[in-house]
Image: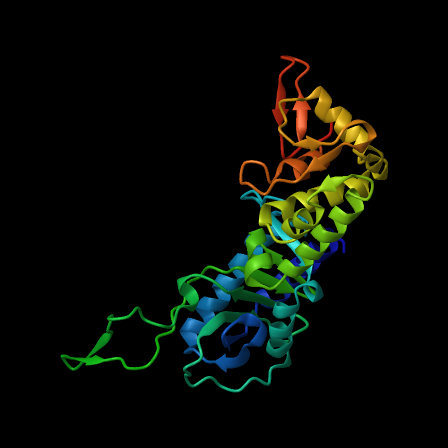
Amino acid sequence: MNPDDVRASLLATIDAIEADAASANFLARGSDLGSSDVTSIDFERGVSAEIASDVLEFARTIADREWIPYDPSFQLAGNQALVDELDQVPELARIHAAVSAGRSPLDSGSDEPVVAMVHRVGVTAARSVTAYRVKGPGIATRRPRGIRLFIPRDGVFERIEKEVLYYEPRFDALVVGGHVLVTAITTLQRSLGSGERARTLAAKTFSRATAKIAIDGLDDLTDAVATDPAMVAKMAQLARLLDAEPEYAEYLTTPKLLAFLDQNPQIPITVVGSGDERRLVFEASPQKRYLIPKALADDYLRSDLSDRRYEAGSKHRLD
């Protein structure tokens, strides 16, 4: 995937549909995104035009940002967006396939909750941009318990018995072609069903990194790195390092880590045994559970200016 090619496709699509921003709108209903059903909804013409304008504005905003290929450890700044291949986000891909097919039944209200609102702008599915809202008040159709809504009719306020659909011009994801763009990593991992990929990467990376390291409590630590969000992100950072610099794996051995800990007694990783039989110990307490993953990722620095030592989770190599 080349982000520049995706950006060029997005800009070309925006240019192609600006003159005739035909739109189609959908709801996904169900207990969760993965099992939801897609229905279509219609708005009166003025509202449809307003929504189409909102979506195109969102698309332009995304196009102006710096794009970062999906990385579960990356913390996005306000001027950045993550780009990923749609087929790597299976729950969203399933919904998008139904939206693109254009054969969804008309929504007439349901007891099933709305888990996503979808707005596609463009004449055809191939030449369109699609904005998704999967969190926040823009998809809240259920009123809080005890709250009643009324609407005036000829001076008499009548109760609204059915669900109310709220629209807010704020979106969580944009799909163009076979790619999805988001402005928050949590959108992919928690809301769009991409978290399993990050957990799988974490497990594989940890296994790769600890092949030559003796650790007491290895099974518990293996479970932790695949389930704890902070450890999942740390393993993604380590995977990026190992892929970019395969020679870094030479430092991931028991003797090298023990020598590092001997030189840095301020790092409280417990070591047991003696001589060649010494082993690192994983401790699950909140104060110590992240120590070994941080050591694996080389999250420690020394300042040449002050000779002080620091813990640093995000580093940019200068040499």
